[in-house]
Length: 184
Image 1 (spheres, rainbow, N blue to C red):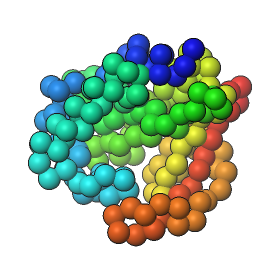
Image 2 (image 1 turned 30 degrees about the vertical axis):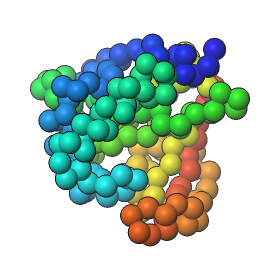
Image 3 (image 1 turned 60 degrees about the horizontal axis):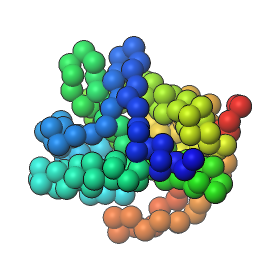
Image 4 (image 1 turned 90 degrees about the vertical axis):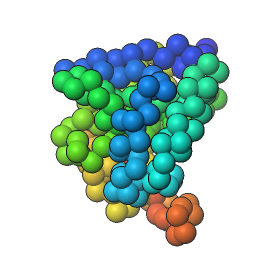
């Protein structure tokens, strides 16, 4: 079965502090709140959201992609408040090679709390146990120390740095690659 077929039936996940579910149009205010923060958008490939319309367009693309299994984004909801505080995702994959790439972005208010590690642990378990991936990787800029720490906490190994591999926001950036294999 293809990853797309599985992602069409993306499950919700619960952790002690978090609920992960598909994004919805009702999330626009919460998502705009952190996507409009330049510190959150800075290391991302997308620009700081200047208007809610930009956030709505993002949500529309993701929501439309759920039906075809081409969207792998989960809203990260802080159970205590019911608020969407970030997005954790399977952002790329290869059915042929059984590879997944995970990613995330999170409200600055929750940086350093272990929230992303908690969310991505569930997605990695899903990737290996349900999607039967062989390899799951994550990437980040070389200066994104927080993401490097997250990947190490997830048990991922540093594999190397792609030098000046992406032109983002007017500059070429170096990207570090981390991975974990099924059975590790």
